[in-house]
Length: 608
Image (cartoon, rainbow, N blue to C red; front, side):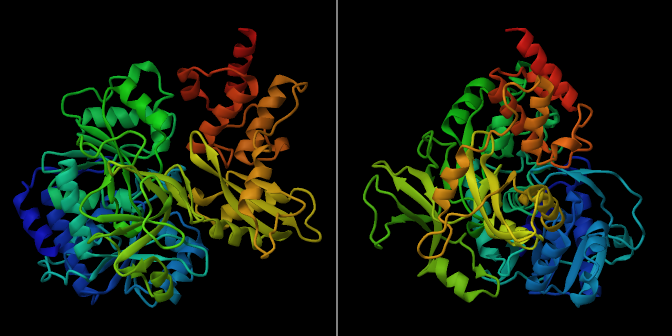
């Protein structure tokens, strides 16, 4: 990988755009900044095999630091810059990096970080003012202090790439969890990342003519490795569109059109949001250069799949993978041999098998656990041999996902053995939510489940029981506690206070029974006799996890803590169900305050 990247970077014309977005960077500028960053690493005493933690919202900084790690033989540990202080400290403790590059906001939140880590700490001049629910960032510009990264690179010497790292050396660590006592750090090898890039070249046709629009967060493999790494490895241009909200979704498509993107990488929830856009956007991707949309990071509903292809007249490629497989392993398209709607296609450059509960190979159409084997499979979990042994057996990765295979070799994902909840393409671990809830005064027990949702794929619903003295308002206090303890993407959509959790004979919560109990409670609100405005406010309180008495018609996206892009779309859909109407696309995009929503509902009621 190090030799490959070093050779490629010299072959790509210096003027060619590497990164396009709020910041722009050419390949020539990238080469210089990466070489100076390697010089900084040498000055800090960092070398091959050392772990370097990266926790910044700055796309340019992540890209340069990641490339410098790869070409120095160091191990990049990329963290969520919006993680809570508790989460960050846990992950830094597990990673034990030799150096930490972090936004000043991260360093301020995690005060003990600099004292406990025993690592060189470098501030990154990036300011994240706000984050959307997809983990995408809205930034404001700030003057960069001279001693911060990347301004300090001006005083560094240019350093050449290190000799190629061993193929099985660890190149990247991404954590799949944060607040539990055993977060799992997925270790990806140089060989695995190289194999993934080679598969992308063959399967997707990525090359130096590609312009890839990918707004996914860079602390996730889909954003990082099908973003900056892909551009490093192929000479492609990476477009980082605006943050995804319902109101800015049109700007994302405008960005793809303006830059003549050849590919758009996104998640199923964004595709569902695209269907709510006005018809003006139907031809947004209808230019000659555009090839396909890549849907990743979660199950793609077949109806949404067909509707996107029909409405926007572009193909959608569906894929399946895990952080433990670098990115993808099974591909449904773009070639006809692997494409069948409603499936995740076929394995490419890896092996797949389906294993039943009793350990035998599943028959055609029989359900079992999906196992994968190939060069792109992780090395293991960082410093967790027992957890690694549970999922890696004789070269096979046990995915924890249930699948079937038809007679023609197409795979379908039909369920999960694991408890992870996939909301809007982001993995939410119930253990993380439960740990935060149990630390809240008044909470005796906690259980978190995912419930099916047309927009999100799954919504996160947490259930708690009262401890003595818990009293009224526990759900609101518990949500506020979660906001302090968890990254925004992990917050539950709803917290329900129950008299008791359904425990089985083994003493464990029976999650399926809990889901059944919750299903009837999800469309909360006032009764039909309540005045219309009050009913709208009640729906908003339920969706945004706010106290009804704190809401008014003037409440909006700037002062309601739970008002993010995913919850906003759930709010719209809840209003449609509650009042039995279909909201016009223009109305969906223009609601900024609850007064706007009340006006829309009143017009719909008056039109009947």
